[in-house]
Structure formats: C-alpha cells, structure tokens
Amino acid sequence: MRCLVTGAAGFVGSPLVKRLQVEKICDLVVTTRSQTSAFAPDVGHFPIEITEGTDWMAALDGVDVIVHLAARVHIMNDRAADPLAEFRRTNTAATLNLAEQAARAGVKRFVFVSTIKVNGEENNRPFRYDDTPKPIDPYGISKLECEIGLREIAARTGMEVVIIRPPLVYGPGARGNFALLVNLVRKKLPLPFASLRNRRTLVAVQNLVDLIITCMGHPAAGGETFLAGDGEDLSTPELVRGIAVGLGVKPALLSFPPALLHLAAKAVGKEAVYQRLCSSLQVDISHTRDVLGWSPVVTPREGLKLAVK
Image (cartoon, rainbow, N blue to C red; front, top):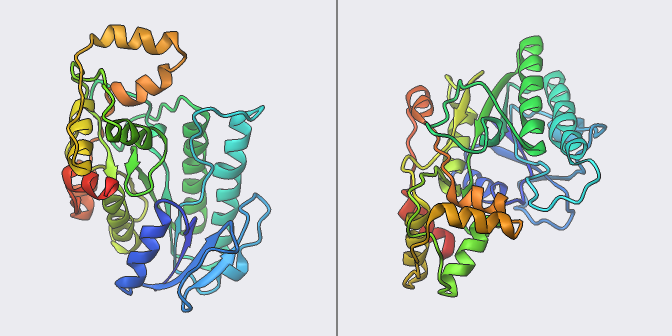
C-alpha cells in the first residue's frame, strides 16, 4: 500500500508519520507547507501550498490511500475580514480539489480528519455519528461543507471516503486552551474549577493516530463517519488533576459558583474560553468501536502524562 499524508509536519501528522514508518505500514508520501521539514530518505516529500488550484498529480502517483490532515485550524482571535471565506478556501475548496484529482488518479480511499464541531459546540447528551450536524463557527461550517462535497465525489467516482470527527486533541506540543491550562497548572495558580460538574470527551493524539491507521485499511471503514474519543470523559477538575499528576505538582483548585464564573468570563470577553473549558461536550464512540472493533490505546491518565512530559 502506498499512502499520502498531508500536513505531515503538524501536531497529528508528525506522530502519524512516525508510526507509519516505524511499523512499516505503507510506502509513504508526505506533503508539508515548508520545504525545510525533514523526513527519512525513503519518504517521498512534496512541499505543497494547498489551494483550490494546486496540482497534486506528481504527489498522487501510485497512491492508494490519502490521509488528509492539512487544514486552516480553529483560530481563537481570527482577524480575517471574512473568516468563513478563509476557512472555505482551504478546508472546503482546496480539499475538494485534492479529492477530485485523487479520484482521477485511482486513489482507493480518502481519510478525511474533520472535527466534532460539525456536530456542535456543547450538548446535554453525547453526540452520535448520525446526529444532524449543527456547526456554529466558520471552522465547523467549512468542515461540514467539505464532508458533503467528499460524499458527493465518492458517490460519483467510487473512491471510498472515511470521515473522522475528533474533539479536542491533546498530546506533546498541543496548543490552544489545553496548552493554556497546562501552563496554569504548572505555575500552581489557583483555578476556580472545583465546583464544575461538566463532562468533556477528549482524544489523546496517540488514540487519534491509532484510529486513523485503522481507518486506512479496515474493510468496513469505507463510506463511514467515525467519532473519536478516549472512551472516558472528564470533568474540568478531573482534567486539571490529571495534568497535575503528569507534571508532578499539586493542583490549586478553588470552589466557585459556575454561574458566577460564567458571568466573570463574559465580563472580560472570555466567554468562548469558558465554553470550551467549562461546558459539557460528550461524544459517543460506540459506532466507531462496533464497526471497526477499535478501542483507545491509552487512557486519559496515560495520555495526559505523555502530553505534559
């Protein structure tokens, strides 16, 4: 099997490429935005700027499976004049351009790493793979539109499409709110989360990589949508304690009424941060388990230790 991984130097791409190489799972071709990214001599490396007009044919030569990770990711303080247009340009139009060329080149399977934001931002019951999508922000909307386009290409060409929707991915080098939380715990700063009773599904990068590899070759994966997760949900206080264990420090958790915490976050313009750290977002991965016979390879406790090591 010959496989192409886009975004191969990224947060998920790097450990995926490493495992594909170590376990000799496939002949490997990778694309990155940078020409300076280093890979083993036997890896075909194509520095490519992903646009709706990119010519992929050289990189696609002989490729059987694509794992598409490259994307314009969620940005907390997006300064683009039209964020939705920017997300659509990369996450929708550029991806569908790749998929059209892949189908013409004879690629058999296209594994698309989407986002749980396609389902929504928070919930009172776990999201399922077959729930009606309800994306809220431009990032989630662009990913949903890409999923719809990929399914249309699959129906028209016969190329199998597999969609994976992960929630927050954590691991070594993670950024965003996870990195912020790790930094606060490391500094032993008081955190007003002790009274929270929320539940959030996260996915360790090791678990996501394992799921991606399973989807690359499993005969039942074609045409399916899979939700990712660690198989064990955490409250924010439990997450803080898990990070603290990994860091070898004692967490400074303070009790504070959640309603007042929410008001305080709104008052300082940090409601989005509050929502992502303190509300509930659970994911039902039973369909992923049942169809693929897959289970997470690390627990949240193990994943958090590896993430902050």
